[in-house]
Length: 354
Image (cartoon, rainbow, N blue to C red; front, top):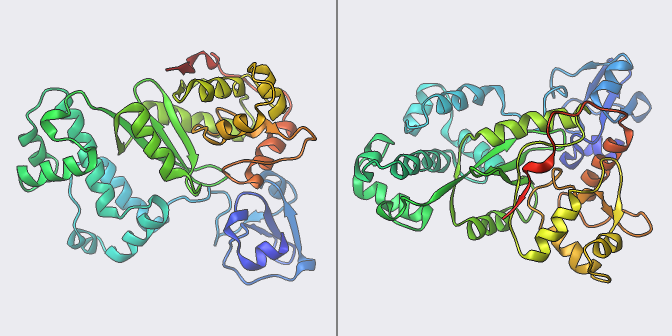
């Protein structure tokens, strides 16, 4: 842990907190402050433990805030985009509010994988799609959503949704949003039926998973806000603070029959417990198919809620977690360390196979 602190290793952000005896503060592993001597450092697994030991949060790295939170200089811009998502922000507009367009671009590329202008465009197209599906003429919708011409709107729309506006009246949107957690930012996706995506944003397979969503749901994937994602965000906060054991937000499981059977078995693993891949295969009536079960678990697109982290080797060793073994260990330790928790009304009956 001291080596990770000295190297400011971001992969450990959220795994531990470093408390500095000489200053009385505790920091993230990535804190840019001067490296302390090893004998002056204590390590804690949670903010609560560090605070209970008498340390105060560092004002530089702000360990009380979720990792990945937008910086203060960007918060006002993000708020204004959400207030009026139809507005088209240009570089000149950014400079007018004293923001460097290149700096904004770099932040969006790092945290969303697309530029700020691409994010805006996708946001506006998603809203436009909703108006078209409700019967509005597509030509007028383009002008009201920041496009200079009908032809420009048609071209951008077709490039994103792979079909023209007139042919999109039955195209359903799949809304994606970014959520902050103690284990780093996650990407959530939802349809009108429920949550269909919850993945760590740094997972290598994230682009593949999103492409598969487009195939399975035949949908338009757009950034934005959604009631299921808002509910998920609240329940994730309660989960990580130990106040709930089960999620009530509806989820949609879509894949091959074998994959869906594997994911449904995952949903039945009790909180704080684990099973082996062999046991999962037996319970599915597929004795000896543990390798296939492992692949199906790896294809699970709804992390934490569909708890593939609760499957281990027969000898109890950890293996095979797309978000990284350190996250799997964190989740298992978190669940095992909690006593009785408050359970919200409802159960996982919202999960459905389709």
